[in-house]
Length: 466
Image (cartoon, rainbow, N blue to C red; front, side, top):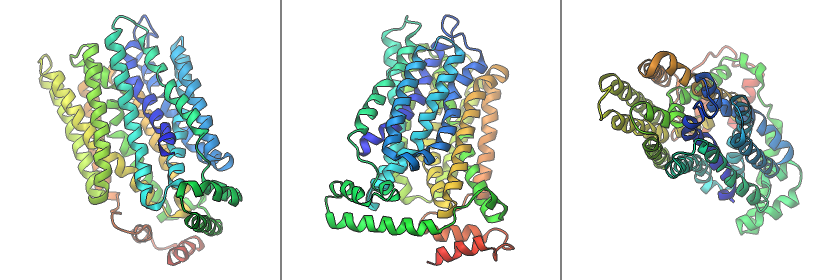
């Protein structure tokens, strides 16, 4: 079941990764003749769609069910990919990439939700992080297909259309596979379909007694949650709630502004600018995809033993140093044959630090810092800001490159890494080995206590004591 559902994660990876190899072909005069701004919009239009998709998907999944929504997303993935591969000009390509982004954002929310709801506590962490692995696996797959098509059909100017069209294959697999996967038992209980939920859960758990017990505990938990008032935007007037939401927003922006998507979206273009031929750049980019995939697997293991703050600080220090290495190489080795190899080595080092330390820690911290009543609001705002930051980086990079050149652009992102490091040192809490209640009480303790008598805060304390 997890394998079928995480095809949503694979598609997320394929559709964001494919542009890396396709954009140099697409931008040429004979094809779509893109300006730097259009190049930025074609690349990042998908992330603007994803910000909106992530915002509305949760509500739709609560209303229509996880299964039905994932089938719908598979259809959007398929039709969006088909339209992108046939797009006759830049404007339509930007619109179709935006529509495809709605499915990417939806999948980024619904796939982890569904996995968390069908898994037992013992394997939940592994199944949810399997989705992260499928995303980087999807990017690696896209880079590999790009390289194969670019190598075997070097003189076909419109080969980018076939690179994009490849994404239709996993979307068909998701569409077909979802018909064999049951609805989430938790959602069925939410809708009052307790008998159906039990029927669904029994073959998954292989234990009737355990299934009964689990359905009962879901019912009890949902009853309790109904009594908890969910936080709304009005509650941001409380300093401790505002502080938590701002830390969440900061984490989302930091994760993007260290510059990950420069490497993920423009890796091939960067390697061509520093001296690789087009085919060589496409092949070298597979190394980037492989590094990301392995580093994500390593990061999953590190999560169990290394403290969160240490992981985040190490990761940002590593990404800053790698970015500095690229800048110095461009500055001092302009015409050296060593330049492309130093750039690819520094890019791989950047991806290793980011995917093993920065990325997984960000998502885990976001899931740990918000109490139950604040989780919907906090995660919604933080994820939306993360996607928005992703869009800004993807859109502005080619524009910066055209105006400031490689050195100026990379120097700007080194500055962003330094600011990210200062933010992490100053504001990010340590959550490793603490219960969620401890984390939230500690975060409450570091803010203004003037409003501690307020009903909302009192309500939280009662919940934590319970």
